[in-house]
Amino acid sequence: MNGSPVLYELLQQLGISYEYHEHPPAPTIEIAMEYWAKMDSGHCKNLFFRNHKGNRHYLVILDHRANLDVKRLEALLRQGKISFASSARMDKYLGLKPGSVSPFGLINDTEKHVYVFLDESLKGQERLSFHPLENTASLIIRFDDLIRFLNHCGNGYEFISLY
Image 1 (cartoon, rainbow, N blue to C red):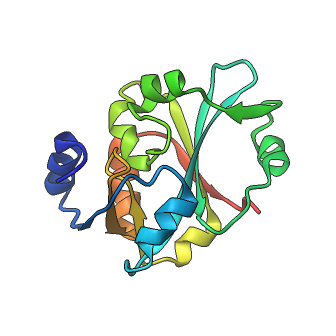
Image 2: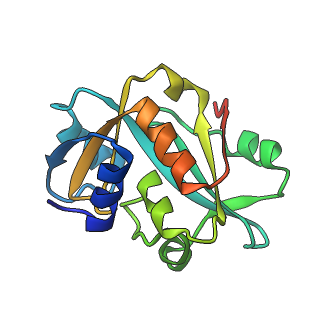
C-alpha cells in the first residue's frame, strides 16, 4: 500500500477503518478529480499557510469545490497577511511534499505547531478522502474518525466558515 506505514499503524491502533484507493500521482485537485469519480465520499482541498512572520502555520481543510476567501481567513486569524508555506516548511512541520498535503501529516508535527481550520461545511459529510502522506493513493475515512484522529494528534483545531 502506498503511504506511510506509521500512519497505517496509528489508524489501526485508533480503530479507524479506511477504504484504500491507489491511483497515479494526483498533485492537484483537477488531476485528483479524475480518480475521485469512482469514490463514494466527500473530497477536500488541504492548504498549508504561514503568517507573514513565518512563526505560525495553518492547515486549512475545505470542500474541494470551494474557493477559499483568503482575505476572510486573514481577518479571522488576525495575523496580518498569510501566504502559502514553502515546501521546506511543509516538510519540516508535516513531513509532506507539495501535492500531498493532508491532515494525516499531523503525525509528523511532534511539537503541535500547526493549527488546523476546517470549514463548517465538512460537518455534513459522512466520509472524506485524504492522501496517506503520498499523492498516489487516497484513504476514505468517516468524518467522526477524522475528528478522533485530530484529537489524538493534539494539534489545535476549529471549525469556521471559510467562504
